[in-house]
Length: 255
Image 1: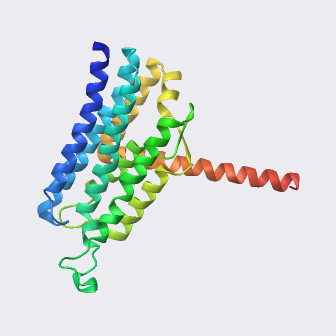
Image 2 (image 1 turned 30 degrees about the horizontal axis):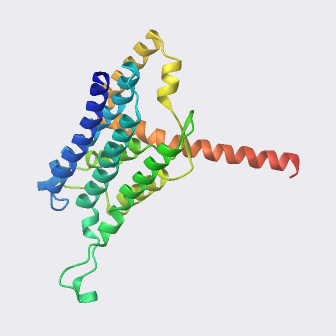
């Protein structure tokens, strides 16, 4: 049992930073300069949680302590951190603005329609994680992994500044597109499996060197954002390529 403590502690760390993100984002009220750093801190908490999430599986394999308990704990932590926290962050940063005035329906308060949009993200994350728990392919993810989806939303505050935010239509498009990619049938590769299979010390040194140069040249946040966006786009690109190949085969064969 002691072997499971360390990987499970990392899963708990994932969940804890997801909770911290929600609490910090709740301190903000509107996307003005006074609240800019709350959103930055909330996004950073999700990014730190992603590090914990990336380490709990390898640690479980290292200590040979994989278990159904650990898998369920990891899923619950992911739902909190990469489903609920990004949805709440998006609501506090943008979607609070989408309201139906109380005079329309004669209610004593404005109706927060943005709340109904924000809940789409945790709903999609919950479905994505539940589907993964009951059926998943050994060599690929079906749908965008929830940690990648959560990171994309967490990184949005870093591309604002305290006087100018990404416009609501652009942010909303990104938010909804990423949410639905989670529950799509688009297939994504499992980088960790390929890295383990092709790992060598020389390749690791080369990768670290390239990464260090990119971070020095472009800033850590731009590099992380670039990586997650490229990964999200890779599944779509592969799907389009596969469809074109099928279409070409049908044209050539005359079917």
